[in-house]
Length: 476
Image (cartoon, rainbow, N blue to C red; front, side, top):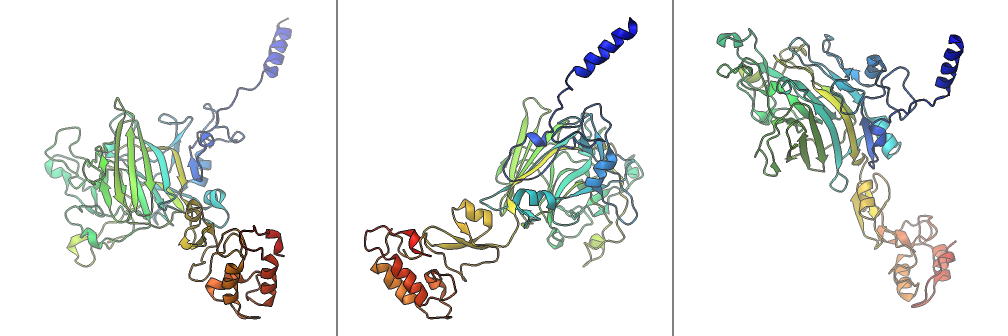
C-alpha cells in the first residue's frame, strides 16, 4: 500500500505544470532604441530559456559572468573580480558587486557594446552617440547597502569609447599616523575640479573619451580627517555622488551648477542614477530610496567629451602615482606602472543593477537630409528622420547633391507640369554625357548623369498643362 501511495503521489507531481519562471527585468522594458540592458539575472548554468531569469535557488555562475564582463588587469594582474551577489539586488536574483574594502585591491570589468548597438541600429553601427534631437539615456541602480559604507567606497560606471580611460591617478596624502590614524598615505585623485595639494593645474590635465558616475572616496583631499570624530576620522570619504565629464571629476553638491537642485548625498540602499546626454550637456539625476520620502537631486553639466561610446565598465580604473607639482612640466606623468591600489578604510562594495542604455543613435558621418520642399541640410541620420527629411547617405553633402521634388518634372511643386516647369527644365539641358550642375541634377529624369534629349522626351510626355494634375505613370 505504501508503494502504491508513493507511486500515485509521484504521478500526480509529474502531471502538475512546472512553476512559471519570472521574466528578467530587461525583458520587460519596452523602450525604443535600447542599445544595452543588463540586470545580471541569467548567469546560472544552465540558464533557463530566454526571457526567464534564473531561479532564486540556482547557483550563480561567476565564470559565465566574467566571460561577458571581462576583468581588466594591469601588467601586474592585481584587482578584485566582478561577482554576482543576491542580498542587494534591485531585480532578483542577483546584482553585480565590485568590492572596495580596505583589504581588497581595486579592479574593474568591461563590457563591449558593438553587438548590442548593431542589434538596435543596424549592422553599419558599432558605436552609439547623443544629439539634441535624439538624446542618449543611461540609467542604473548603485546600491550602497545599509551600513553607511558607500561614502568610503570606490566604484563607478564608465561609458567610454575604447579601453577604460577614466583617470584615477593620484598623489599621496599625508601619513595619517601623525594624528593617531593608520600608518597610511591614502591616494588623492588629481584630475578633479579642484585638484588636491601637490597635483598639477587642472587646465593642463589630459582629456579622455569617457564619462563616469558613482562613489569615489579617493576624491577626498583631506583623507586623514585628523580633527573629526569617529567614525569618519582617519579615512578618506566622499558623501556626494561623483561625476567625470571627460576632463575632470566633480563632487556634485547643492549649487555647484546653475541648473539644478538637491545635494546629491549618496545614501544606503538604492541610489537610482539617470544620465541624459544631448550634443553638449549631460543632465544628472539621482533618486535615493532610503530617506522617506525619496530624495531627488539633479543638475546639468556641460559635456567635455562629446563623441560616441562603445564600451561600459564597472569598478575602479588602475591608478599610478603622478609626478605632480613637484616636477614642473610633468605634472600628469606617471612615476610608475599602474599600481595595485587598496580600497579605503571602512569601504565595502558598490552593487550595480538594472543598467539600461537607450535613445541616441548609431554613430555615423553626417549626410544630406532632403525635405519635401527640396531644402537640404547636413544632419545625422536619425536627426534627419526626426526633422521629417529623407537621409541621402553617410558622407553625402548638400554641397554636392540636390534634393528633388516629390515628382521631378513638377519643379515648382504646384501639382501640374506646365510651361513654368519647362522653363526650368530647358535651362538645365546640358547634352549627352555632360554632367549637370548640382541644382540641375533633378532634371536628369532617366538617371544617367546628364540632361539630354532622352530627358526632354520624358519631360514632354509628362506635360499636363496648368491646373491639370500630372500623371506619375508618365515617367518610364
